[in-house]
Length: 132
Image (cartoon, rainbow, N blue to C red; front, side, top):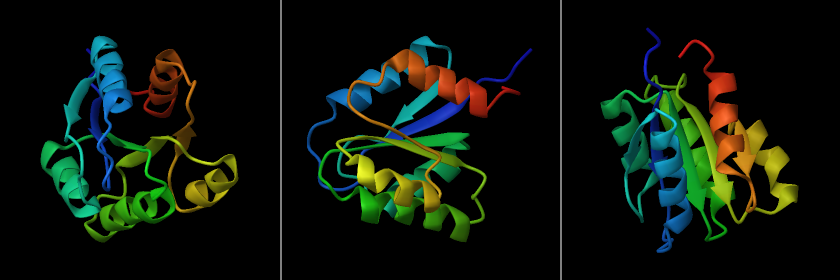
């Protein structure tokens, strides 16, 4: 029997709008994944701590504030510092296309822009975690 994929969905920074994050969390749950949602206004330290405590396979970051170039790499760096660099990170939200190469170079595995379907995100996760 395959194990259940565990995903932490988080909103780093000062965003107060989390409808998109909740839609993604619900879609992943409905696809059979175990989802932990941390809520809004989380620091990178809180997100990494929760991810390690929950033993997740990957973290999904949602952001609208424009602070993605600072906050997303900080999450990846903290994971590496804590010996949890095997936890994959993907992101989504209002992110200029020109920022995506830099985010991927910083260790963010994938970025989903507005209009991405939940099916695309689910398929992506199943492709990067095929043994699950």
